[in-house]
Image (tube, rainbow over all chains, first blue to last red; front, side, top):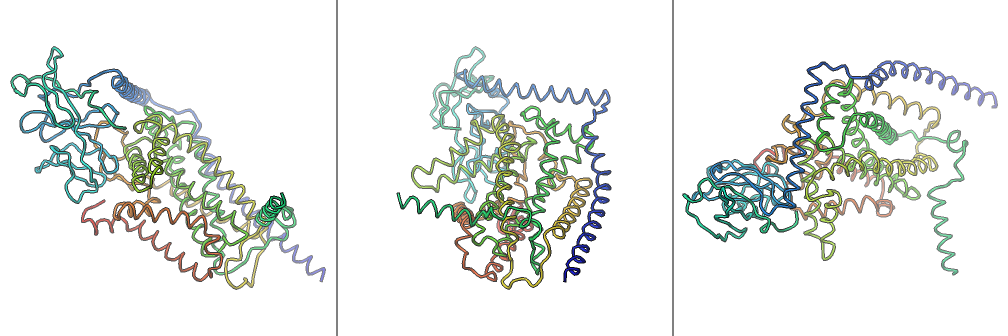
Length: 215
Length: 370
């Protein structure tokens, strides 16, 4: 009885040693492949002059972009109005993106009467940024869940996942001397002249006094 | 006073049953430990496999820390640098990405088979609840890691996820309705997704979540070792094998095969090759969200229902699922394994169908590509 147990233990030992030997060999082979990769990961990169230049210029470009974004944030904290674009560059078929007072995206279009349409570009469904191309029906598309919005009313068309309209943002048209010629609040109430000859060449701004709601 | 003592002794008794520390010796953990051999024995390897992929994640993750820069200006550029210029950088990053998917796949498979084998039954409640927490942590790893490359899909998909959290507030009663908005702000760290969000996700992904995961994993493994492998089938298995050395060696062989497969995958197939390229351009705040924004495949089980069904219905479904998962040890205490097996098959069928064919179902129902 005792010798049977001894034999079993011997068998177990033999199997264990064989398996450990196999595993050791496998581990050795595996090490050859992986350790070479792991060590070379930490080696100094051998870059050409062109590569170094390309990396540095890209780094500087992105740092500048980040600095611009930070500057935008600073402007929105301190300034009562934020420049969007000139009225002449507005288009009825392709909106111009800008950043609103809450650092959210906005879109500016040109209405049939030549005046701006300024709406939030943050989809009211799940917050994606809506597209800026207007189709033949006057609609823009949110690419995330395919909600379509009327740019004039901001309202989503029936069947869209979004149920609430894109909010209108208050704006002002300002002449070269800084004089406000026309304003429109988020409810669409206007103050000032709508004479297009007078407004020609003016600049579009969003106004802090119209910024409301949490981001 | 007497009642208090009784309550305390019950607690001690409960914990002694769940963590029988008297078995914490060489004899119980090594010499006497047996693993049942039956038709479901393969499932015993899934937990170890999950642990293996987690270890790969930790090692490759630490490697990536040497080059990754968690700032909005440098995050994307540093990932590009790793991919293009660091020797074997592409391989290490790809290995990290592939093994993350493998880890979640094994986590889910481990949870489903554990459920089918009734390995959650008392006195294994701590093992089960710990496992459920680690399953959720696995998804949290995926969610937080997704943002770090700071490309279009990363930022926009995170935006959608956070907005989804906030949206759930509409369906909560009274003061609770404000909680999801608060949670969103807490995660986001600012009015919009920006540097604060990236810093938070980075801290969560590389420090906080791993620490919590390792702590729970420690209790989970200790508890499993003290209780031994669960029986797994209704009729006690006729055969069994020694945990040490046989099962341990087989486990190591499975790890070796898994490593070989993920190694080849990481060497040959770029993880990002399944999504269209524009999604991997650096995030641009001044532009439309590009088409094709989607979460990682392991979130499809929630993503497609959210796209196709009323939000409130999915919200209730998810809440019930999480509650049932946590309380499975008590809810299904007296349920037969055969019934649990059928339930596990239904869950598996749902997960496989929605993950593989979710986009086709969406196209059929909505008439457009997702």
